[in-house]
Length: 258
Image (tube, rainbow, N blue to C red):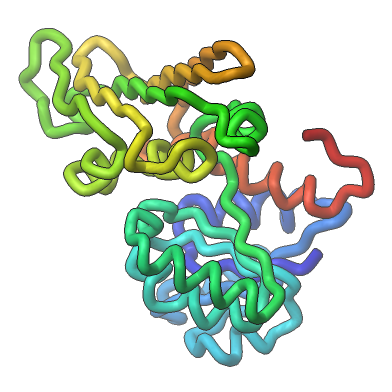
């Protein structure tokens, strides 16, 4: 599978390192769309890719899927056009808090027979949640996220503090840079209007910790994920980066689990 990436930040570099440098058997990053070609010129020789600053030329290049690894504004401005031409994978799921944008992307994908993939990112258990919700039998989904106090601008906090307690839809509005997990959890399950969120600033932790509780006709489940940050970008979780690679690899398999 030949891959095009929008963006050249930490996640894009992890992908190129793991896929191109490590000579992945079935995957290859070929094209990278950037705003500043001169700034990222070194990537062409380092990873054997071609840089593009023109979206039309990028989409016309020899790629099978586009991975967005930029930001929410890029999702809004470019993803509708991308889905007219290619299957895509979206990393900046915060943009999907906009219901009108979600509806537009779904309509375009259906009309052009393309698929928009959303990797699980910094959490797990989404297969169970989707299975439980497939017949509308989920009764409760709650996300408790604990983050280093400094990451939530509480540098001088001496003990943990609840900074938000409510529904995912409001949490996303108030903390757009910290609630991507709530969006993907809501979309997999009961929706962002019904998903409960508790956000805690904790000066005694050094990583993001997500505790997910799910209840329904199937029974009850709990998941806890403690995320290590990417070495090159502490704001991005290591699991979020490798979830992209895992999703791409599973798309290429003839034997799939879940």
